[in-house]
Length: 424
Image (cartoon, rainbow, N blue to C red):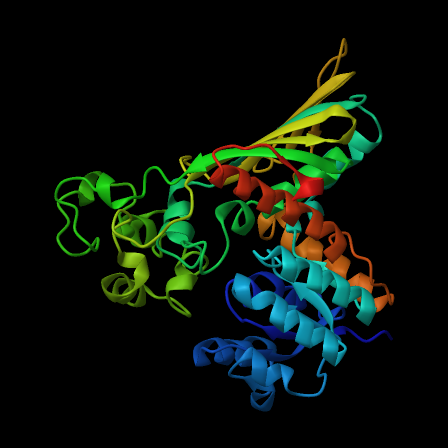
């Protein structure tokens, strides 16, 4: 009987322990976690309790884990953005295959270094661009490749970040500053750059981008706004970004409605309402959104030109009610559009009745990112079990979309200058 692929995890946070590790619970015959590292003892305790990893295989840092002889087939690297490449290079030196949380790095030089190292090592390096593994985008890519709408002419994609997600991750949270992590177009939207490149099926030639941090600034704080939401803020009742609303009372994101999952699980391990109140009183997630140290944009647009006269637009905006993605592709023989949240594609061949492609599962349940997290793990486990090294979102493909994102950010900073990627 085939043995499961073994995994070690650097970074037992929301992605490493909550998104990718649970695949073992559903498919223990395919995946087994045997070691892990995190600086937080409570996260290591969760690794031991949930997955049976022995105490002696739980390490207090990535460096401590990577100092050991190779302990598994695969190293999952799910740490902060600027820690990814050093850990990945060390893991390849040890002989691990690597499953790397996106983005690779905000440094193009580091992206290239990992690309070269992966080729030299002959190991699989797969980046977690999980949208390619969803039923929604896989079906869309398939019908485009089959020529259902003729030659692709335009692609228009929107990432609806949601006001509360922006406040949580990009104003109060870990990805609020580009100098500490990555610019927004890479940290949040490298998924979208990857999808646009995949759907276009052609290399990107030029980009142009505009965007800014417009809302979440100190000068926009309403009169009477406190430094922290629980410090007697006079604006509390009318403010949608109020931390109590987002983390306590909201039926969609609060501990009373959603429970201990994301985003509350970021504020406290095994969160309870009492722990969330404590975190809001003293931690970063209780700060007023107008009194944080954030600098990443809250909205951005990108124009992209691909080979063979395919043109695309992309919009990232914080100012939406819900967190989802929408897309429309036009071609010489038809058009197709859809909403990833609905999991429906509307295919309209010119002169024919509309066809609705229903991608919803019968039980209506999807794992993270519309099923992409689980789809990635299934594909990756199969790749390693079969001795392969070239995954659907391997490092070579991923670097292309990183170049697109970094060029878009350079364009934005230059006031919308058109950048030719061959020269970038």
